[in-house]
Length: 115
Image (cartoon, rainbow, N blue to C red; front, side, top):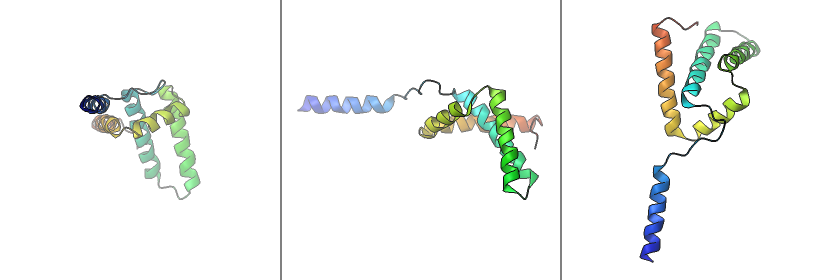
């Protein structure tokens, strides 16, 4: 009985300490951070336009996102699956957003953000 309890305890501890590998075709963290930084800058651009029509805002944002997909050579399905995976792993998503913040800060310092 003690042996079974000990083995179960070891299994639980070892399972908690390993970080799960992302599924195949998941975008790497750095690429995900670059895409998210571009998406947030695009959202900011659309918000600053202060368009009265939601349809116009969505249309412009849709075009900006299409440009982002082309720039990063990624399709929406790969992005969506990667985003879902990272959202279900908060520790990884926190790391990604730390990178996003750094990327945006660097772009702001270099005046490389078109708002």
